[in-house]
Image (cartoon, rainbow over all chains, first blue to last red):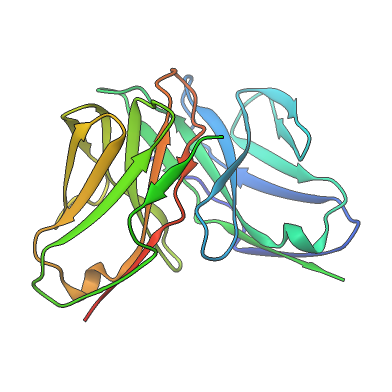
Amino acid sequence: LAKTTQPISMDSYEGQEVNITCSHNNIATNDYITWYQQFPSQGPRFIIQGYKTKVTNEVASLFIPADRKSSTLSLPRVSLSDTAVYYCLVGAFNAGNNRKLIWGLGTSLAVNP
Amino acid sequence: DVKVTQSSRYLVKRTGEKVFLECVQDMDHENMFWYRQDPGLGLRLIYFSYDVKMKEKGDIPEGYSVSREKKERFSLILESASTNQTSMYLCASTPGQRGNNEQFFGPGTRLTVL
């Protein structure tokens, strides 16, 4: 059964780079890897998505090795406001068939002053 | 900006009551989802809909039903609420593009069943 595994929690300090790794050994050919951020009492918010190699946007980078069995979300120079839960999602949503969305249980990131 | 709204932020109901949770999105998205979120269990998919009047069961559909009469609105129904349905309920929507897992979430409804 497909599974998405990520660390339960991480600690960091302001200004550091944070890397959160997600393991997805049974990833399928059509699957994408997506990361979300969630603050307390809010819905998750999309951060970044990728299929292979590296993707970068204004808030994060996503590194995916050639075998795609893991991925790493990289947050450069975190601040206190990056304290949140980060979710890894693996799958490919095709309406009607072949629907598969596998969520990780989330990584609680605490950024300290 | 995509907006997904949910009818209530907090709701308290009694065991056996019929409960309706409403979700509306304003971006003409094809797909809509209902999740529940519990501590230590992450997000679990209850139902999703890929078109008006079309629905499919997710991973934990027992005790729930859904309705999608209009494209922008997706309702979650608890026919007879039970205490084990106390949870945070999250609605999400996404466009119909293949491979696009960018979901837009509402703020959530925290439901307490007494």
